[in-house]
Amino acid sequence: MAFAFPDSFRFADSHEYANADGELVRVGISAFAVDQLGDIVFVDLPDVGASLAKGTSFGSVESVKAVEDMYAPIAGEVVQRNEAVLASPEELQNDPHGEGWLLVLRPSDPAELDSLMTAEAYGAKVNAG
Image (cartoon, rainbow, N blue to C red; front, side, top):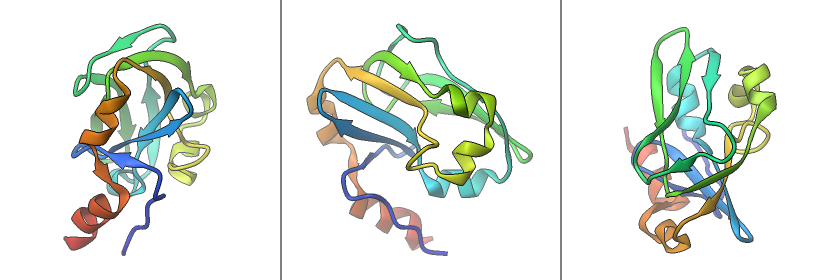
């Protein structure tokens, strides 16, 4: 199955995305990662106000197959978390690039977005397998 990704998104090797929206960045995991996980039963996210370093674990997602850590694609402060996904993890599965977002960050260095893969490059990577 070939996956398509929104052009405005940037992706980490670990399958998290970052989508800039003004001065803030919305973070989630890709549809490819969600597909690999299978049925999602639990999501753990940091509290608002938490500071995340790029590449460090910010929470986990549990499926019927596995528990996987999620890693911050950029550094920043958590200004919002998706309470709907915490209450109903299937939201992440149903719409990972939309209503299934996980966090909103105030980036420490917005230029870090440039170090992430474009949607085209990420798509080529995950669709090649």
